[in-house]
Amino acid sequence: MTNRPRVSIVTPFLDAELFLHAAVESVLGQTLDDWELLLVDDGSTDESTAIAKRFAAATLEGLIMVNADEILYCESDSAYCKLIFIDGKSLFLSRTLKDVEEALLSDNFCRIHHSYLINLNYVQKYIKGEGGEVVMNNGASLPVSRTRKQDFLKLLEKI
Image (cartoon, rainbow, N blue to C red; front, side):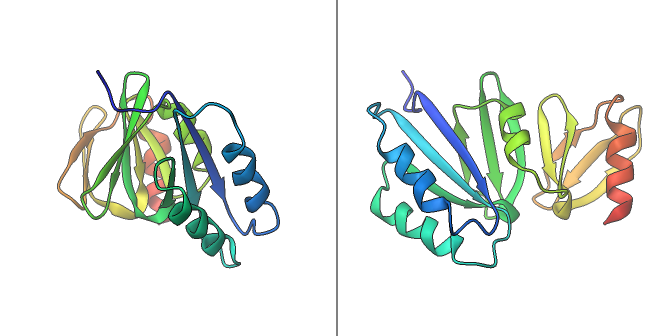
């Protein structure tokens, strides 16, 4: 038996103070109670973060506030996705890695493998090979697929 919610709603936001309150209220108004809301702050400079934190404090059972900059990498786990954070904590979502990839619109994230999406800001080193391997700041060694290698290396050069 799993403790995972039946539904995960991922809502990325950037300077969305005019709309974030209504978006969260819409989720809170649903009749289904087995859900989680993951709010992903993509570097807001307005009051969006404060609005999201107020909701998170009010509904701890179903709302999670996450800063995208604190995500080290995301790992596919079948129909779920595991987020690994820079502080060592992790979070399971009942969303696919593809869903999370689409939600994280930032240029800082790169899909390096069918099972991994990484935050380029936390790449410690790249080890050459057929596809290669990425070592993250936490020491995790992640494979790079041959088909994604060139796109990854191009993005890595920009940093």
